[in-house]
Length: 432
Image (cartoon, rainbow, N blue to C red):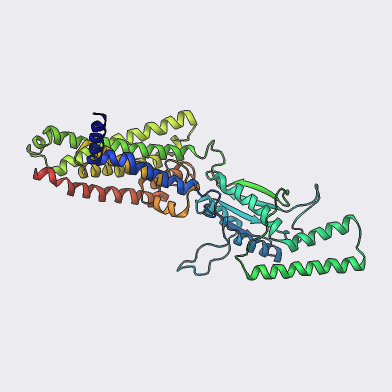
């Protein structure tokens, strides 16, 4: 009897596609996404940190440092903007241009190599003069600045042996006294070998520098915030948008599912027979879902303003634009899922699978700076990513409404397309 019950349960599971997806496909899908994000943290697949390089010294030492940073596998070092048709040969970044790029979100950090670096690149003395590098960074990505600072010290320590040796010789002679002719000859021979080593390494950019552990920093690093200086937390607006949109998707799907309930009860047939077209009915459902989503987001951000001190009220115009556009796109998505599925069970299973996947890829579950480039590209196909980007511009970067053009366009066009597709699939209720 027990075996019969188990066998019957397995047959029921096999027939219930929604339950089957929830039991096997959804866990594997989420494991895959989290594996791509966190599984390669200690491997060569770790996402590279994008950093802009500004050379204020223009010396041989600064150029060699830039080449070493460009060889660093954990950095995506950029010295000038991308070429365009209008500017095929863009000039190298200045400090002002790099700061503007970081403020606009083009890169999370910029490294400024100071003037005088070539004359006095490092200091071994505890109180000696050391060049001060400036890292301009966006605090919404707390990893980039720290990684850049650490790799700067590592690069100077391991990838510039000639500079280290010459600086060490200078300090040795200033503290101990001049070397004998024979010692100077041996020292020059050693420096010549280092020069030959650097020439060979430069001829092979893929060669890896030897690592060194447990050594202090040779240069000073000054971290400077270029955006959000007076804001209490860089991540509050991010998570308010990310979590809010994720639950909007569930709410809109549930609200759109009322079509299925009305179809099962026969109420839908009575409504359509009362000279109410399916287009009018979908439009009414869409308006209701949109208003519900707007109210839900408004409450979410009001709570963030009251509890976490999000500066909501100075940004009300931008907030309203992003909220209405996001709510419209999400409501259209709910209409589409409701018109595609046949039962509440199917709607619940498929919506859970799709919404959680979109939320993971779009940045609602963990910050985007942890994602690889491939996952960031995949996330651009989700509402979550565009909504988070728009709300970040409003609340974190303090950008005007006109800067929301890409996000608004994508959300509105997506909403219109999804609504048209939902209307096409809703024809089945008119034919029934």
